[in-house]
Image 1 (tube, rainbow, N blue to C red):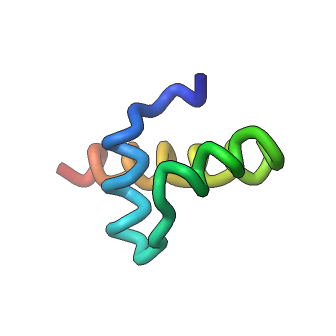
Image 2: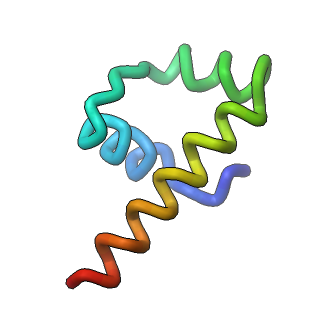
Image 3: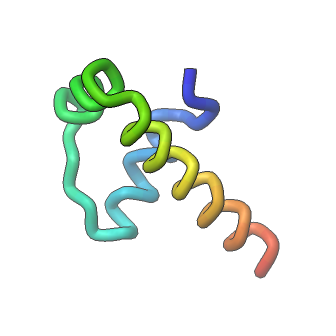
Length: 54
């Protein structure tokens, strides 16, 4: 569990201009969890920054 919902992850990736589908994300999570976690952490950070601006 990465601590972020799939829909939130996908929305944040789309906003960042990153086009990854469910299959690619699942493969990344299994084959390279450090990279996957890095993306999730970036999304959490950006999300909290946007929340603090509101």
